[in-house]
Length: 451
Image (tube, rainbow, N blue to C red; front, side, top):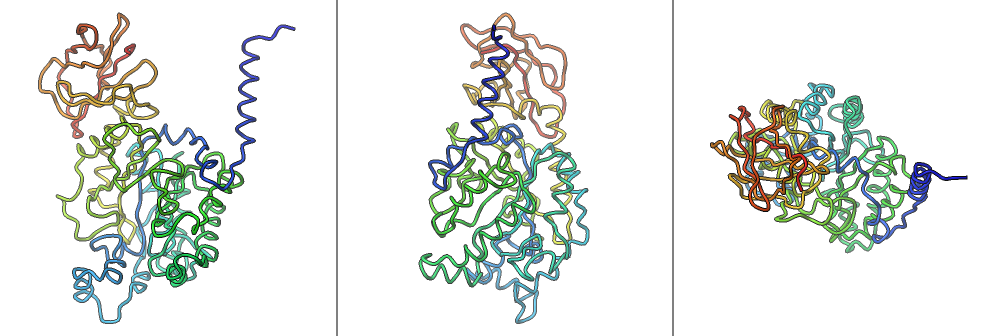
């Protein structure tokens, strides 16, 4: 019997799938780090981060309000409380004021979808320990028993998934003032009562109940991963959890882990590498440059403008990263108009230029100082040259692309091919049309059949 090429391809595909499905990961970093990152994550490129919790009630300074007030005892936070709240007022007294009365998850999801984002990550629990769902391990310090009296994680998740966006959950491992955690800390982390009674049971419950596509771990840095039992959890997550085939994780699983172990790398907050990293990474950035949580004392000068956001996103994608942009809602459940305006502005730009962002790969050259600075992305034999300032002239020179007789150059958003001429052995000069107005101040040249 003659075996056809298509039959051989099908056999190899089935063999590969079976091998992949049969992979079991052991609870050690060598094994866990060998897991391929699910493809969806690299393709989506752009997500929305949402920091929301009890810290949204004082809405002053930062989402680290409790720590700066009672931990660091910062004078400005103490003064804020002295001026605005009665003596004896505790942080837990803020929780009943976390009403979320205007929270409409469908409205939020509409805004996030309009931004062009393909995944959304909500804080399930920040370092204050308050969970945005009815955690059985956080009695009366959760959004079902206190404050909003609703399951915020479930409500937003349902709205996000109706729009075919990926849904992720942020989870802080440590809790600043949890007495069980503080007891473990005093022991030099030789005891693990907090991990065994609170942190890990809650995390397993979270995954089983909400089935997140992404777990954004944080609050790990005071103790090693052996204290957190991180490798045991990740082995279960990758082998036996209900999301084992799709879930993506970051790198914050214990002291010394970030930029070294886990799924993709966050490294430090607002990580800004100077060259192409050799591992998939993500930059988390906040529209409010001072805080991740909502601040009533936020000033317009402290808010990223649209061109700055687009420039930051383009740089990140050109260097192979994902861009996770944060907004902090108010305690009553509203997304500030200035944040919504920025998100819708991103979406308008991506409607024209998204082809140069989604599902792209870093090109052999990531950037060049051309007529104006240019960032490159690519798909197969198509290269995208994104420039984030107007060259203010008709001729545009690119030195990196190698053209051929088949090369076609277009401006995204305009169907007509542009005139161009080659430069010596490499590069080209493009005759630009009048560039259409865009509040983002960024445009994309699409170069087909270049090397």
